[in-house]
Structure formats: C-alpha cells, structure tokens
Length: 589
Image (cartoon, rainbow, N blue to C red; front, side):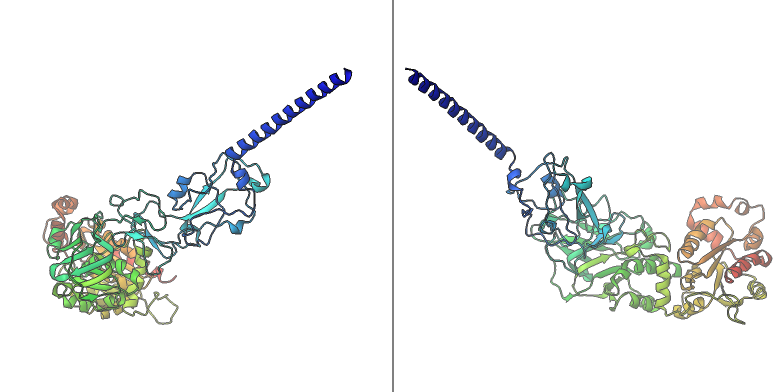
C-alpha cells in the first residue's frame, strides 16, 4: 500500500514537471515569434557582409558615402529610387553598424558637364568633385545601441546635385540619363515668374518641364533662348521651336532684337521677329552645328556711343561665351557698319555673318539666342552676365580685337625724354572747345605731349583705336567721342568736361561709371557759367543759369537741344590746370 501511494506521488510530480516544461517552451516560442514579427532587421541585418540595395540603373557617383534612410519619401525627393520590396527601418530603431564601407555604395546622377543658370541669369558650372557643386543631405538616427558604430555621433552624409528647384531648358522635354554628354547643357529659367518647378521626385529617366522660350522680364532687353530642333526662316521673319506630337506647349512671342526696350522711336526701325512653338515647319535647307545668335544693328547705330552701349557691349556679353563657335544672323544689316566693326565680329564668331533680311534659306540649329543681353548704359553687370564677364574683360577684349600693343600707361621718368601723352577729343559742331589752342599750350607747359583728334562717324576705328591706346590721358566734352576710352590701357585717365545745365548725373552714367568699371581712372570737370557760350544767348539772370534743373522737366529731348546742341565750351585754363596736374601725378606711380 505504501509503495502504491509513493508511485502515485511520483507520477503527479512528473506530470507537473511536464506541464511546466510545456509552459516554458510555449512562452519561448511565443517570445521568439514576437521578436521575429516585430524586428526583422535584428535577424536580416546582423551580418557585416549585407549590402544596401538601391536601383542598379543609377550611374556611378565618385564621392560615395554611407547613408542612413529616415523616410523613403526623402529619397524620392532627392532623386534616389528606393526598392519597395526591400526591408525598411525607421528613425526610432537602432542604427546598424556597417563595417565594410566600400561595399555600401550609393550611385547618383553625375552633373559635371551640365551648366546651371540661376534666377539672375548667372551661369555656374558644377563639377562632381567640388564642394560647391553639391548639396549635403544629412540623415541621423535617434538612438544607437552600439557605441562602437556611432563614435562621436557622426552624421552619415550623401552629396546630391542641386537641381531640385530648377527647370531644364532643352527640346520639349529632357531626360537625365546615365551617360554624361559633353555637349549637353542644362539651361535653367532666369525669370522667377516664368520658372516652372518640377512637382514629382527626380529619378533617372524621368522628364522635366521646360521654361518658356522667351524672357521679357528685363527692363532693358527681351531675349529668347532655346535648345532643341530650331528652324529659322528669315523669309517669314520667324524662329520655330519644333515640338513633339504629344507636347502641350503653345507659345508665340513677338520680339525686336535690339536692347533699347521701351524706346518706340528707336524700335520702329527694327524688324520684328516671331518666335513660336510648332509641330509643323518647313524642311531644313541648311544645317548648322553651332548655336545661332540673332540680333539687329539698326536702332541708333551709327552713333559711336550707341554702337557700343546698344550692340558692342551686349554682343560681347552674349556671344563671347561660345568662344567663336556661334553663327551671327543680323537683321536690318548695314554693310558699312559690318565693315567698320569687322574685327570685332570676326573675334566673336568664326563664321561669316548672315544677312537675315536677304536670306531665303531655312536654317536649322540645336541652340539659338534671339536678342542681346544688356544691362545699364555702356556697362556689364558681372553678377548677371554669362561667366561673370565684366567691363575689364570687355576693355581687354577690345584691345586684343584691334591688336593694340599697350597694356599699361607710361610711368613718368621711367624712360628718359618720354612724355606722357594727352589726347584731346575735339568737336567741330557742338560742345566744341573755343580755346583749344590755349588748352593745348597749357598742357604742354605741364609736361604733356598733346595729341588733338576728332572721332566722327567716318573715322577709321582701327586707326583711331591705335591713337587712343598710345595715350595715357584722354579728355573731351561730354559726347560720343569719349566712347573711345575702351581702347585706353589700364590705369589711364579719362577726363570728362561736363557742359552747363545740371548734366553731371548723365555724364557719370554714360562714361564715369563705365570708365571706373574698366579699371580706368576718371575725373569729372563741370564748367561754370562763365565757361559756357550760353552767355552769348541768354542774360546772366535767366532761369537757364539760376535754375537749370527746371528745364529737365521738359524731357531729355529738350535737355539735349538746349544744353548740348546749342552750347560750346571756353575752358578756364587756370581752373582746369589742377585737373591735368592730378592726372600727371597718377602717372608717377
């Protein structure tokens, strides 16, 4: 009986042990199942040989770094295609240590050969190996379980090309592909009001919307610039931008390619061109492998100042970036003007100009610019110009175009018996010096070698450029002849004599500021009432002397007629002497 009771007790103990074992095993299996379901990365990413998997179609990116993703939507915005089938992890989970860094690469689009233009029309060339060409996208996890993998809590960075808020100007739509095309160029919208932002994430192979064909936002000039299938038909005064059959673009612009916007009288002499998008166009009869530049040489050309402020400076700004590989198409062409500035045109373009108004071909280009980039009078805004061109660059370009030898002024005393040269720009009709000989004699007494010459429309610009370049100081009354300062060597001095009539502002605008921008010293001498021949026409107490600014309310035409066309200058040589002495002092250093 006792043995039987003992056996029963043993069976009960064994039964309890079995149930306990079953419970323990069950709890372990439940726990293991919960871990597997809730944290798959704990199992899948423990091996150091595991690789991050991204779209294999992305091109190689040289500056590859480890990246930790927080949100797949951020990757999409950055132009990275994420494989949705692969496991993801969030920022509140432990960051996994990846020991074999070279194996974990992120490939991104290469932009080293693309040219990007910001809202101020400034072109910036980005290269993949320069910090300025990249945007750093920084991702950081909230916690780190393994201190060894998060030393110093360093952020994992990836560098991305800065193109997110720009639109691309090419044919109807452009594709960013894996291969770099040396000749390809990304043009971005320059007018914030016309710029279209891409609304979808940028991924390889996706298409981006284009900017408008023309930009009419500038106060001085309108300009159209386009890439793609462009057909220029002078016979119909049209420039056609060919569209694909599924394109929604429908644009038509009327442009007069001369940078004197708002001047109706001036533009009345300029041929109006039509720029439009089209799905139909005449067949090409002549193909060109270089860009086209279409502009007018009508308007106010023929006046030396306007030749430069309206054409030469804007033409340099617009065309020099092509290094001669550009085809000029001139509307309203005057053969004598082309001959006069032949050296400049040949320096900017390697091809004979096309007389737009007399041409019957259908010219086909892959890139075209209609109009010239212009800024203030006779000045370049280097913050907006292509490649940051400045008036110093223009001054250097003009001296090289005319093969001028002097790159510096004469230092007084450096060469024995060599005197600094003073060029006096004389005028015969208006704003002329009535005591020219007296002025020349005073300058010679100070130690100058004096040269007197007049720059008129019929002057041989090449010969006159040589005369100007040989001088160290140039002086003259406000007028177009002072435009020749573009041929002066650096550090030379320009002295502008301002006629009576409150004209100091326009004198500085037209020549003072441009001269300083070219690296030329500038002096401005405003005459007194006693130095003006207006005393011969009006009594001394006339309002023209007591309050000349009152006449400015009548407009510039009245100012020009009264204070410029009807006034000559009798210079007070004793008063003016100090100005020439100051210029002489500059030549001693």
